[in-house]
Length: 529
Ligand SMILES: Nc1ncnc2c1ncn2[C@@H]1O[C@H](COP(=O)(O)OP(=O)(O)OP(=O)(O)O)[C@@H](O)[C@H]1O
Ligand SMILES: [Mg+2]
Image (cartoon, rainbow, N blue to C red; front, top):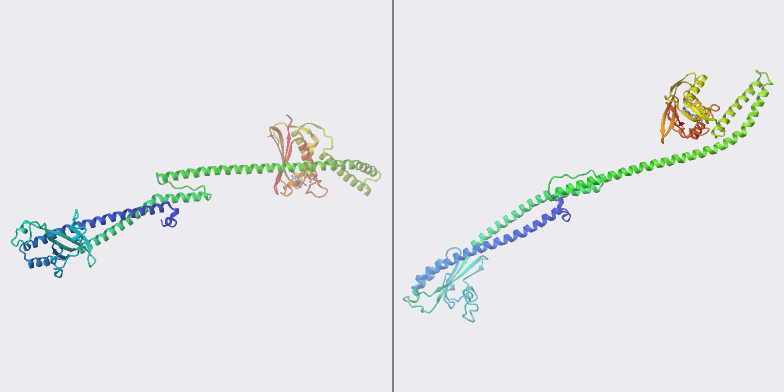
């Protein structure tokens, strides 16, 4: 709660409490002032009532002594009347202002002060004219020498029949006023009572203001400050990015409605943010996909370009080498006939013939790669060709410890192309598999029909349990002359030639491999409709 008073200009509750507190203080002060005035008024009217009855009492006490002109008696009575606490002085003076009797004996014979109530109560200008006030004043209040409030009352002694018919005949009948009785009464006791009452009232008022302010403060804090603070904290959190935050709804008043609206606003904001996030992710994925596609296309283009130029070069070189090579082989055969079969010369010539054959095989491959050899195209039954190739290789020593698993599809897929080229592809797959398995293990051949871009393809899968292909070698696999085989064993043309043949027919060649476990090649060829 003290937080709200740290920066009161930033808190509605603090402003409300201060404003209500100020209004309460002002209103209570006005009430306090009104009650105090009323108290004073009431006490004065009571004092006046008692003062007047005291005056009556004084007049009655002296009445008979006055009629009998018993001066000493009158003087004594006045002195007696001034003995009770609170009666300061009682004086009787005549219309000229001469003090005839007084409880203060030293005043007897003196003149009264003309500027006091005794004169000014009836005459506005007693020195100049005897004119009377329309409403004479009989009393006034002043501070006595001790600093207490005192009441001065003046009462007329009228000329009554008993006065002018008295034995002494002291007064004429037409004289209206015989004199005045003046009493000074101390209101010290009332002052004290008023002070006590004032103190008690002030204490009550202060307690009341404090109690009401405290209760009001607590109520405003609970009803206004706390819910507003919760909302402000919530907004701070949301502004900081926490869209999962929600404020508790505890009431059905405007604060409750505000909290509910706030929560639903945050909910909408979160939904919009999630949507935006989703779109961003989608966009990012789409961009990544497109970038990959562009990269692949670019790589393919590069590869195609590279292969095309290699092909052109290979075709040129192969043509140039082919003729001299044929000459070398022919002459080597002719020369061999001149030596006995078991002579060292015949053996050397065999090596020449063997290596020249190998060269012509490479050249043949190069020409196929460059698609420079004429192909004999037609409808080829893939299953028949696969079975024939397997049958052929099985009889070779290299494949003696290999088991072939044939999982061929029931139908007889037919592909338009050159059967020799297809066989070349399959053979390379088998030889690569055997090399990878060191001559022992299973080779699985499976076929299946697949659809790609609403076109029918036959997919031939060659799986082995060999050494697999390392991550590093994967991208180089279809590059011409890439080989991991020892010199003289592989030329690195098998897969690039196969890739070229398949691509040319509108299919493709893919590979999946787990290093150390095995490899699967997928040859996808378009089926004849
Ligand atoms: N089934 C396989 N398992 C493991 N590695 C393979 C497999 N098939 C191909 N390779 C790797 O790919 C390389 C390239 O094969 P590719 O058939 O093009 O050439 P090659 O077999 O080395 O030589 P060539 O086929 O011209 O006689 C191989 O040297 C070998 O490292
Ligand atoms: Mg090979």
